[in-house]
Image 1 (cartoon, rainbow, N blue to C red):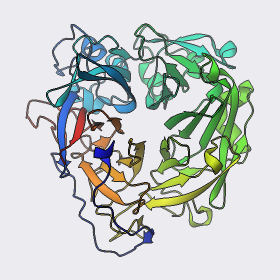
Image 2 (cartoon, rainbow, N blue to C red):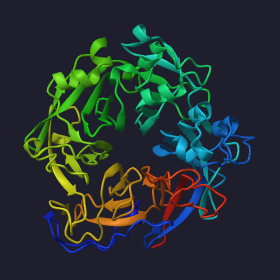
Image 3 (spheres, one colour):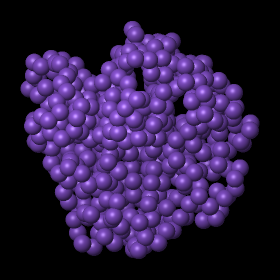
Length: 521
């Protein structure tokens, strides 16, 4: 998508370490958002907008179970965008979103929890979108539009299914997702134990049963184009809370999945399917491996495919000598497999004795971005060379920051990574609502050309908000981005949010909002 390529390429290509450098003009958070020059920002959907037919009008005072079941949820992150053939000349897409959270303090008046309603807010959302008169909008009654949540029936497949059961009610706390080369979408469940405790006794789905716990915390595979399809939890990919996931296929058609553990000190995993990706059960057998840091490279150490290993994946990774990264999160794979990118949000608990070239700073809460180069583009190779391409933080105050010369902004706590068709890396940040010197935002990094790793600003979110990733429509030059939980600073509540964006009306709560960024130049 040429319209997404950065203009004005500069000749500098070396990275710089610049402690004490002059401050770059990234803005402090405010009650409204900030859109960079060259973009037009449109609102596509907000918390409370109708997703399903006959959805009631949005009224959060208080939110009802029916609203939660049929409306756009409180929180959202990009899982996948599937472009569709234009209909009557109108561009169309199907967008899949993960919906990980619904905190009582921000969702319900007075912070009084309604777990059954909250359980319907989380899960996943599939939207039909169409582009008319220069803007994207939800298709009223779209064929694929649906909500997945704690009431969704899921299949359980793979080696562990015989031990824990072949079905379970509920998709819980998906943190991330990705499209697959074979047309399905993967949804990675996160910290499901928190939801199990919250939902215990609140619904009729048996979440208080201790035998249910092992049925959550997996990767679910879904056909988003079939509204009658069930998510299938693929146990061969291991059992742990994930922060990021990305899928590719080898030259001979085998699926390769990369996953990051959602933890301040988290492992990085790879799964290689035993059969071709077009096989409907391709993700039910294969080789799971954990990354071990050796200098500036990673070596993939294979784990077992037995039930104890797959259920206790994190213990197996530690016992195999896996290395932990500083809050690993978003993952992006170059189309030619020449680069594998990993965002790390930072780990204040890392001590100086345990730093290494891929986690270079102790007591760091700013984070960094890595790129690995599979030899010959072979994602199944046993070792990937790696390098640091960005060390986040304010270069005027933070030691060890690293930005390409000519970059016009800085960031902290990178969380999501997405490559656009022009191979620019879009970095989304997430400070968990903390109020700091910079707002969370969406940033663009060149990955090639005369100025590799040059960083530019696209968008800054309002106070308390984070970025839920990016997806790209090449036909219209559009970028989709969820602006997550605006106003949700640590001390905020439903009654007293830090902002009421996007409406800024005193009688409306802040709303997670799916926006579109469209190039104007």
